Length: 589
Image 1 (tube, rainbow, N blue to C red):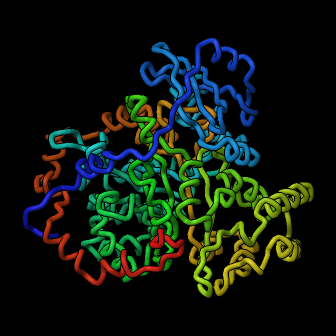
Image 2: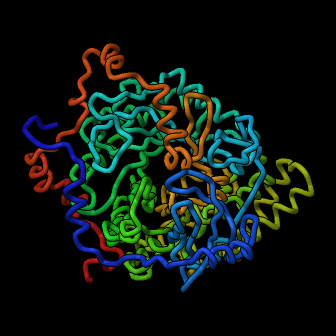
Image 3: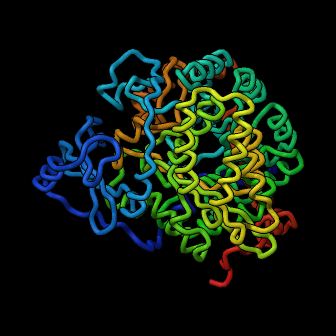
């Protein structure tokens, strides 16, 4: 890294510039206490009921659990609750049509994954996981440190100078991995190492190896990528140790929208290519009136680097903390809102109907359990996330979502009918599996339209192998040829729905032995994240005594003007950002 004078990226100046111009706001409807009580009285109950629907939420001020109603007005789905300080309404889903379409694919399963001894009656105030939780851990998060090399202006998580340092020991990390593996009846199989900035840990390679030793097939690293830009050997080491995916922060196409690592991305990509991996998932935190005008361009960017970019996973912002109504109206965006922008910004190449809710995978998993005996259920709430796959038709230079040539819904319904059939038979022998696999592949062709499939990709063979073998390697080969597009909207105090957190599939492990859903760990930090990390942190003095050569300022990345100018004028920068295909006609607008 350059030694001359520069600054530690914080984003405050860029955010201020971006928010001077407001393109649109969401106007929240007013609702009286009498109207709320009437809706509460008549609303449906039980997961998946029609609108209006009764659920529970939390009060942003008192943190009490309060009744809430999810309801529709003028095509938008809202959530309203009555708190001691008054009525609070926020947008839940920006399209009732998408809400109802996704509702169809809800999938619930009683997994009995609890590892704390309580009834769960106070959900979400007594997590651990409790007997009320409905989903096993699809992705385990382990916070490796609260140190960071950036100083993001909005972040309350990273350790500032003089503050306690949270950094679990290798023994604690192994214990947390083992706890999640012991979930019954399905143990965790994927882990994300996160922070702070996890690459600041000197023993990161050893931690990755521990995760592999504990039987985790999928290990991903949640990073800003700064160290990976300047330390190519570190990229090789993490790849060799067993990291499958870099979950890489990437908020936009310009230095203003992606102030964290815009200038470093070309170096990160170059080092990953030279190391032969890991695959990259770009992770844009999506904010209305800030970067929501660049979603199509971000997808176009990912498609241009498909040799290393495996996916783009958009995360609509979670407005955690006390956020005034005016600010929520400016910055709130939901899954349908982001998907609608993608449809507009890709000129319809990726439409709203091309997306499916995460629990549709549960219906597919049911078949694989019956077929192969392997168990892995994505039983998240239907409103938590959405996904699709897109391919490049290289002959015609067009982008083709999987739903354009595959009747996804028809095929999933067919698999479910076969699962019911197999479940009646009991376990299958090898010859039965081969015969059934051949039958399914032949039937699969009736759901597949070759005419609309991307040319030069061999999609039919990829999908056949994924479904015939149903293992991690077969699915991995599928991902090498497709770009995964995901959408995961984590909650905050204003749109909190207890029915969602009960079905959360992304969990944090804590050194006190508990496993906690993402949307309790981060939304109620005083009970979970901050409380437990304070308990297991080193004081500043203890940390300095254990690491006498450590210097807080050396943790921080200083970006110099010389580096920016050098990158701006480099061939690598041009090849990364400028000399790329325009798959959606973006330059013509």
